[in-house]
Amino acid sequence: MTWHLTEDVEEFRRAADGYLARDPARSTALLTMSEMVRRHGPQAYGDAGPARFGWWREGGGAVEGAFVQTQPRRPLLGPMPENLARSLARELRAVGPGLSGVRAADGAAKTFADEWTGGGDWRVDVRLRLFTLGELTPQEPAPSGRARQAGADDIAHAAAWMKSFVADVGDPSDADHDYTENAARRIADGLLYLWEETDGRPVSMAAHSPLIAGQSRVASVYTPAGLRGRGYAGAITAAVSRAALDAGAEHVLLFTDLANPTSNALYQRLGYRPVADYLDVEFI
Image (cartoon, rainbow, N blue to C red; front, top):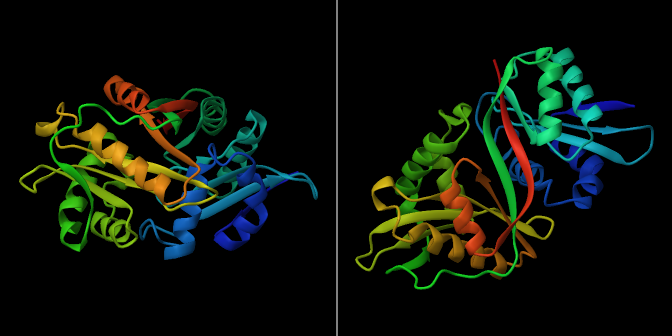
């Protein structure tokens, strides 16, 4: 009974693909992050160090737990029982301290944090909820304007909004992220959309992830503070959800911050339904 750690994404996917496929919704972030490393190399998320992957299995049995960590961010745990979260904390401490926290489903996050800190020196930064799309129900009436796919001329604008989005809701470890490169990749892949007003002025943004395991995840839904409350976020979320479906997604997912009742209510009006709750935990 052991954890296997590697920086080789192909080794990880060979070992863990069956596990990831058993519950792809709850494994969505592990799938998309490992796919990003596959496409763009071991430092796809920055220069702080190569991504790290791990999986747990007993003997020759099935994989029962897995995680991904892109430096310097917190490890992201896939579905696993709490005893495996506890043993993973011990395993990662043995190979080197320095974790700032962990993100996982509620029970696994708390168990990992208790084991890492010795029982209490941690706090919850963000409470998250994973949603999956049922029947897409765009808001009526829609705001003025239209959705369009972002192009090369939008890279600087999108990068600035991504930075603002992270400042509002993101992991502090993303503060030095290369947002221009991130925006350029998403735009080149045709995954980023803008809602623009009738005068051609962009007023809201959203993206969806590449299609993996039959699913795509909506992310980076952002409207500047002075433009909120006008229906733009709902309109662009509906548009990018439709784009993901048109690209072949059988399931469209998104994460929300439970501290924001406005966005949670909005997504449910659009047809999203809750799947599971997660914690983003900081070690003190």
